[in-house]
Length: 111
Image (tube, rainbow, N blue to C red; front, side):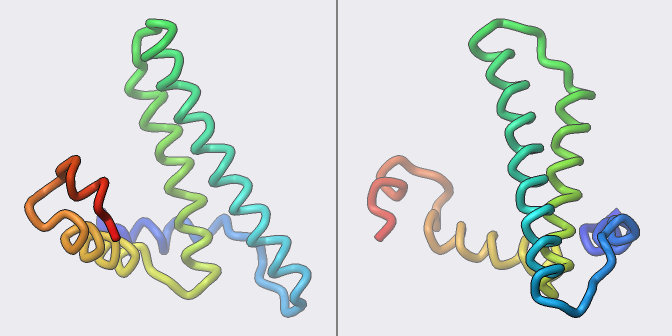
């Protein structure tokens, strides 16, 4: 499955788009908070693995990353963006920032 196929399938659970500014703001807020909450669950899972020496449950990690992707996809859809264009722009930015792959020096001198 490619990113845009995923985004189309994920749209079926988007809240209804209403015409008032307040309902659009509420939908954006809901999905931004959902993204943050799911990202927090990823962080908590990894924290427990790294600092508390819990075994890393890859299935649980995949599920939490999937939930994060769902909210990211929804925010993109609500704003007329595709996951593919977001991915392309991000890769272009990373290539410019780190032309030879990641380096500490390039990271420190991002400019």
